[in-house]
Length: 135
Length: 159
Image (tube, rainbow over all chains, first blue to last red; front, side, top):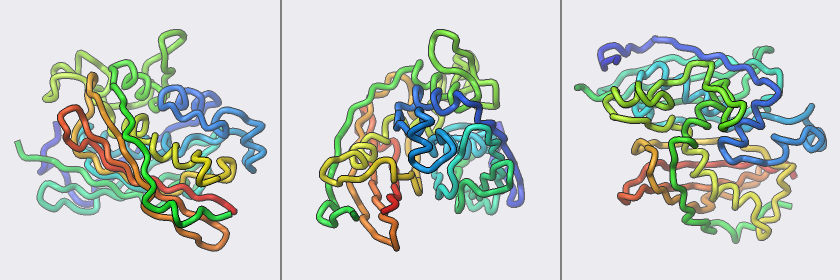
């Protein structure tokens, strides 16, 4: 597993996820979020979208997955935040890009972006922090 | 209509949630390109840390078994937020609501068998133009009384 000295400001990492037609339903089943705008295309259209939209918290999980992949241990992620700026819809391909901006003591500070295939931000202001203890 | 400011400080919960290894694996499958469940299901086909779903790899890890991915917290910690958004007293139109912002502070790993309790409180009610912000802050504790995760959940309602 990566050690503290393996983390350096300027490191980058990325993760890509495709939104297949069933993803919002699978995520609903696994997370318990059955808001009908994620399940029923007619309701999604009534709400002003092209059809169903993916749960924002599924995209948020992808941010977390990107950070965990970089940090090397799921328990090292101690903070994650972001603003949802654009709905994610079926057929979208989301690219998460992360960058280590500072390593202060055991705190590894990260900034992230999440963009769709058109280059539009689906999340903004995404930041995370990892804590890596010396063993 | 904007949410009445008198609801600031309104509390929800605590809500109890018992964590199972199946729930964790389902969550990992759903977020990792797989299919959750026990019929026609499949494991994650996109990268997901093995300690969150592969029992053998997790057993050999420093944690000695499966740990939930951090955002598994959504499954149990969302309840006060969802209750607030559907609270008849607040009269929010769910079709006009989007999840606007999210923040988590992760304090303790979540493991299969944990018994968690999440309580929440409305911590901000704010109008900005025709948008209405409803913020709920949650705290989840485990069976040892230790804080597992804190969440700040913000809904935006288009009025």
